[in-house]
Length: 394
Image 1 (spheres, one colour):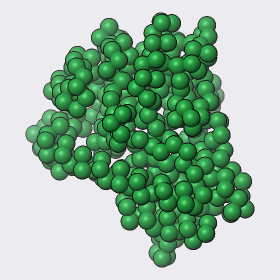
Image 2 (tube, one colour):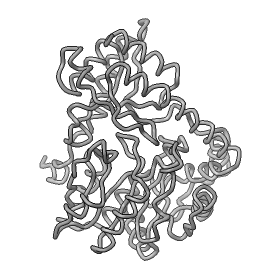
Image 3 (cartoon, helix red, strand yellow):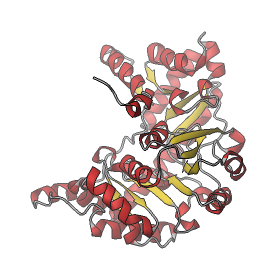
Image 4 (cartoon, one colour):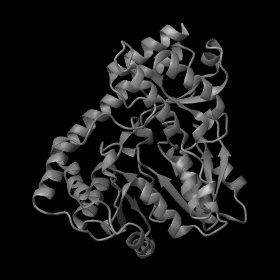
């Protein structure tokens, strides 16, 4: 069977390839005194809090399971709007909010609604691999721009201006970012958006980790810059609802009809049960629990990254959000007699029963020497991971 050129352009998601190998080994060592520790997947170990689970059960019991409008439940769009006002002091009208089947669906909708064949989208290198594949799936081209630790592994206005060409349509940013956990400084983000705006381009920004910002200097939404950009968000990370597949996007009002048409045809609507459950995310009791968990994620970061540094796994930029550590493994790899992050990750998997993510997925700018640790796991698990790393690396 002939596979489309579009499908052939999509590279494997190596995070998942590593995960498959780790799962196979995990079954072999499950009954040993060193079962596999997974620090590879960016998934909170917390589940949806009680009120959210109860709301989902109530929706099923009451038969609230039929299609919703393609833009989402009006009540949920209003709750999200209120959250922006209460948390960030930003006025985001509900009519600009589109509820989606996860942030992935939001990114797909944005790309299909805005990108034509041959359009180029500027992105930082390293960055989340699926983002460039969403661009490719819309027949656009992701142009990866190498970034440095001095730039917090983020694009700068200067680099955007230098890279802008005749085919450039806009930028796709992420703040905080996966894999680095770093955010774009607000002043720099404003300058980037000014560059894009002056050229008639589009700014798309992935803010799915925004709720998990730890530094007030980086905790503001890009929506504060105006109503002419697209923000992607999700209930997966801060709201701990990964498998519920629910997210949202905020778009300029003029774009809503086009996004609605595409959503109607591709998705019909996001999960009705998940939408009814998500209403309970914004109850005071749930929000208090999310903030408690955010503090716990920060405590894990504050413990784990200094321990990595002691072991020669240098984290050149302290993450200010999300739950990742982007670590240079060059020195540690030499100690193990291997070369590069891919072999280093497999060495840890086999010798320490510890699964991490090699940099291969995230681009080509020094990614062969970096690995990503996820600190979304519990503190005891992180402590055990450090113990195993210390035993292996000395």
